[in-house]
Length: 429
Ligand SMILES: [Zn+2]
Ligand SMILES: [Zn+2]
Image (cartoon, rainbow, N blue to C red):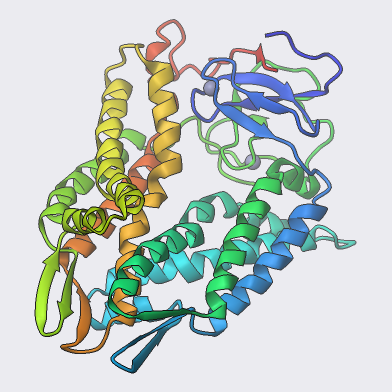
């Protein structure tokens, strides 16, 4: 593809296939894609950061309002029960599922709070006359790590599924905190969408100008930083000159770690589907519900869009993730060079979709928070829920541990990955 000569360009390495190519640099609205595997390499929207700063402030306010009060209350036979966002994790812990409770607490309150704290401090810190760049770099490095674990959006979808079950059993009143949660979800999505992390790293950059690599010396060992995406001329183990992250050619022990997570998740997938995830008591009658049982009930109640959603999120996606991860690991170990584009696209898909499998775990945490009316109406979590939460977390770890560039390295017989000068300079639109 011919490059547009009117655009300034920069070197960028593709995190999916490892190709180093030139991409448009600091050009607003222009998207770059990898010429080898077609993965998107980012688009610059607002290099001035005023819009993400506004969204970060809005998200901070919504976050505080979401925490202060109950977000839903229900009444059955004149008895009232209300829940705030921490009630579910607390009840899960009371019922003996401490780790599941901690997981729900972490991904709904702690990680969204940390993510917002990082963004507020960074976006406002770089406006200072003498910004504390060392500190801001140290915290902003965590933004891509924490990001996928802040799951307010998935939690609200879990609430929607729980809501349909609750309305069949009780009178449900929505409280102000729920609307704050919706505001938080929208403002965080807008913040992620409008934030140009490259511009943040440029603003925090205290390195030499121009860098050796910018000055046209393209020889030597080029390593892309997995955190800020700067191309460094360095050896593995050295620190990135812009963000101080330790540079690696490939993720360390990627295949062994990823296989360990995949095998552990496969082992948990069976009990997650065999054992009940919750026990629902209504008028002194207790019924165990498996994941599949819950889906059948949604279909039977005529709620087929929700049933289909839970079927996809809870049964199909974990299975697709496990099978496709196994295929990718085999390809990385015994390279055939076939279907590389398809496998890379699948990797990006499972990376994007993984967190949405938490819907069922959130639904259970909301039901155990609200349905506490003894023999009248009660919900208890069960072993299947813990196994299922384990499957979701382990598959997310497996995807994170895997390095898709290993599949391309193996296929590139003429210049194997261990050779540091495997660097193709190509151009993208
Ligand atoms: Zn690529
Ligand atoms: Zn870096």
